[in-house]
Each structure stands twice: as structure tokens, then as C-alpha cells.
Length: 368
Ligand code: ASP
Image 1 (cartoon, rainbow, N blue to C red):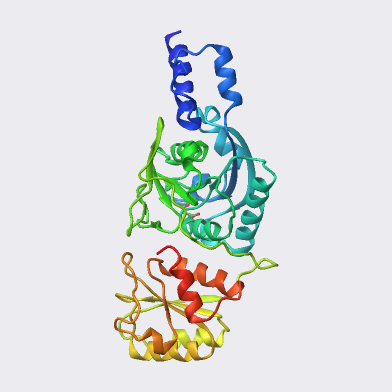
Image 2: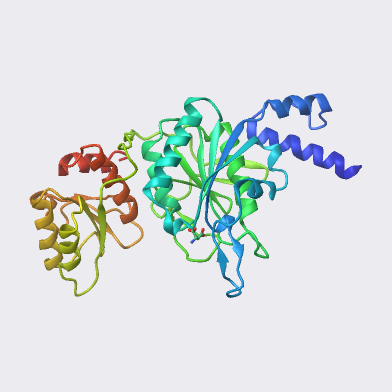
């Protein structure tokens, strides 16, 4: 009996966190009030793509597993109490490890999410996703979705069959964030391990730890626990442009070239020969590279290939005209964007006919 009362109180508390009902709602709510609260729950569509969060143990080794083995419906059903946060619907978009994430799935996701919002089928979307390329999918969606409704990507570092799987808790909190009115107008977000990160700033920083997503240049935008969603600042929509998806299912070819000691221009010449429309340098330090590689990049820029200098360092901004003369070379700098996100933005820009160094630089600087 006591447990039943506690469960009821907890349910009401969750609803409060999720829907911001007036504080005057009594925690000793009767059944009618609970039914009203339930009717007022937001609608959250869960789109599943695979990843470790849907992973199942394998017999290969103690830590081996198959990503994407568990379906969307099963994932949601494995999370106790999640149905008290929102009216949930589920869709299986893909069942892949995110190392295999591709333009086709990205386009399907983007088109379906836009349709969900345009047809008012849901108030928010949660995407379950592998963590390896989660930041790229989040950033891609952030640049193409036209909505102020919450879109939250969630993953896990341990498969669903692990002794202390982090997926159920992460999924619970992702739905909690998506259902929160305070999450509106914040662009695409990433929720793992009690932390809310923005699509632009976040990156995977650890190969195995459950605390892997961080935003090295800005920190998280908020925190979440089973009873509360806390954002650190009011919603702020940077003056960022939204880019149209090209027809078909593919973005233009943009290569990332990784800089290192004793570097020659071969990787860059290969990218040119392979008809790359853009090249992103994962440079050393402030986006630097060797003389030979720089000359190869200058050759690329002369041919109209978009050349963006980013850094392999992991934090900090890449600035214009420091040790490299970007103005005379026709280069762009990625500022805060890491190489993998600089690649996504370059692809979207080229797909939208934005290719001159000045225009591309302006687009990279949109947030700043
Ligand atoms: N390889 C997995 C994936 O990205 C890893 C994970 O989900 O954590 O799908």
C-alpha cells in the first residue's frame, strides 16, 4: 500500500518535471487528476537506428556484442516508468552500428522528423543511435531541421545485456529532456550520463567510459536526473542558417586528411584525384600542416575545391591567418568545429551552392 502511494507520488513528480504543470498540483492527486495529467503528457516519437544502446552480448569475448540487435519497441519497454513521462511511439529507422552511419539513413531521419513535426504527429523526437558517429548525425540534423521542437539523440556505452547497462537510464533521461517545455528552441541535443550537450559543441572523448560526451569549448548546456531537467542558460537560438537537403540520397564528397609529422601531399593529391569537392584538414595545433601538404592544399583550392583547416587537437578554435595565410591560399578555418563536423557543414554548403571561401567562412562563423 505504502509503495503504491509512493509510486503515485513519483508519477506526479515526473509529470511535473516533464510538463511543468502548475506547482499547485497536489502530490496527493486523485485518480481523476492523474488521468488529466496523463492526457496532458507530451507526445514523443522514438526513432531507433541501432548502436550499442540496442546491443546484445555475443559469445566472442567478455566484452563483445552485436550493435543494433534490439528493436525500438523492446528498448522502450525495458525502461521502467518511461510511459509516465510521455505518450511514446516508436519507429525503427535502421539497425546499424553507427560506424556504418550513412547519407541514406541521415536523409531518411531528416525527412521523417520534419514530417513528424509538420504533420504535428509528435511534440518531440528522441533518436537512439550508436555513440561513434552520434555527434555527426546530431550536427547534420541541427543544420537541416526547421523546428523549435526538441530533438534529442541518445546512446549508451554498454550493451543492453551488460551487468550495469547505461542505455535504459540514458533513454529515460532523453525522453525526460525531450518532454520538458524548457527544451524547446535549443536545437538538436545529445543526452547521455545525466548530461545535456548541444549538437554543435559535443564530441565523443573516451572509447569506453560511460562519461564520454563532452563539449570541450563550452561545456554542457544542462543536466538531467530522474526528477529534474536543468538548463544552465535560457534557450538561445544562434543565427544559424538551415540548409536544404539535396534531392537524392547523397551529400557531395568531402575528404578528411589527417596531419602528422613528416607529412607529404599524397593524401591530398589522392583526394583531388578522387574528385573530392572539399577537403578538411585535421591539422596539427591551430590547423597547421607541413609545407608539402600546404602546397597540395593550395593546389586543391586553386581548382575550386573547398579547403577547410580544422584541428586534430580536440579543443580550441582554429583561427585565420596565424601561421598560414588563409587569405592568399583561399582557405577557410573551421573555428570551433572539429574535423568530422567541419566535413558535414562543408558537404551541406557545397550541396547548397555555397563554395567561395568568403561565403563558406561566413557560414562557419554563423554562431559567432
Ligand atoms: N560502435 C557502436 C556504435 O557507434 C558504439 C556505441 O554505440 O557506443 O554504434
